[in-house]
Every structure is written in structure tokens, then in C-alpha cells.
Image (cartoon, rainbow, N blue to C red; front, top):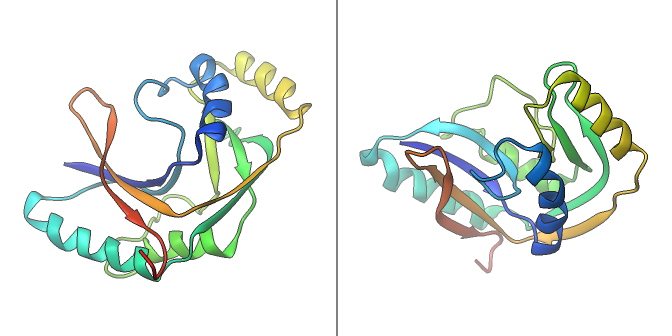
Length: 171
């Protein structure tokens, strides 16, 4: 089965992201706004108990994640993805690194760029227009997220929460 690990921000930030996603994000109906900590990976059912134990250990040793949205940015020219850029913070970076260190598989594909996607799969012209307009705006939001979610993908391509893990020693 396909799994992923993400942080879900507060409802106000999700609502703000969704105001753009419903128009500009082809994955709008598949998953709520989120910050990806671990891209899609496969796990056999027999390995799931160990995976859950490993994630619990990471969560217990992690600090709640501070996120600060400070602008809109894009991955162009690599892709036409538009996102709320999140300022790097040690709590977020440490959590990402823990989920990409032994016993977890590293992510050889991408470096960690904390973000919340608000648009993807746009044509070049639409991408340029939307980015141009959004970069003129002001975006600012800060919050602390104290839980992360293990998600799994359903047959229709949508994602749902398998388990939630509280971050920190009191979890």
C-alpha cells in the first residue's frame, strides 16, 4: 500500500490555501492542504507495525513544528507548482531529517523545501499569470503544529489519515 507522512495546518490556513487550490490545484479533491514530510512510499502490511513504532519514536523525540508562511513561490521551471513558502525552522527540518534517516529510507529525489501547495498542473500561461498576481500580494501566517499524520492512498487516488502522532515528550 502507498503511504506518506504530512503535517496538516490549522483550519484558517487550510481555508486560505483552499481558496486558491479549488481553482488552481488538480489534487484539490484528493487531499487537504498539507506540508509533506515524507513523499509517497510503499509498505507491506507485514511491515506496518514496525513502521508505526518507528514513527512513534520520531514523534516522541520531535519538537512541535513551527511554520511561518511568508510569501508565494513556485518550483518553475522544474514544475508549474505554486505554493505558500514556509520559512525554514529547526523544528521542521529536524522532523524531516528524522523521517529520512535510518531506519527510514532517505529521499534522494528532492531537497527539503517546506511549502504548502496551492496550485499545480497549470499551463505555462496560466502559471505565469497566477504567480505574477500572487507574488504582488502579502502573505503572512505563523503557527505551531503539534501532530503529524501517516496517510494512505485509496484506490480512487485520494489520501486519508491512517494514524495521527503527537509531537513531543508529552505525547
